[in-house]
Length: 97
Image (cartoon, rainbow, N blue to C red; front, side):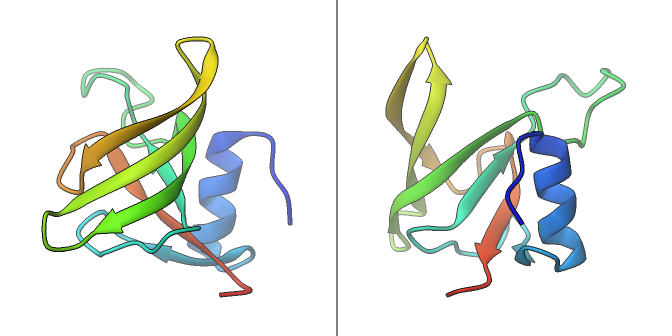
């Protein structure tokens, strides 16, 4: 099921409707959906997805993931994250994988 709302998308993966959910401590694969929570901890939305991207490359040895993101500085860009980055809320694994 496609989604336009980031929070709804995370809920669909967590419930199993769109595939499965990986916790941030687990290792994603290229093609997995990366959900972020960039809100401050004191914010009432803390713990909710507020940004999304797609894992383009994963280096398990270095614990890094390259993510393709839209709406990053007004453009589509790639960005390198450590897998321990506190902003990563979790990963959606599409059912077709």
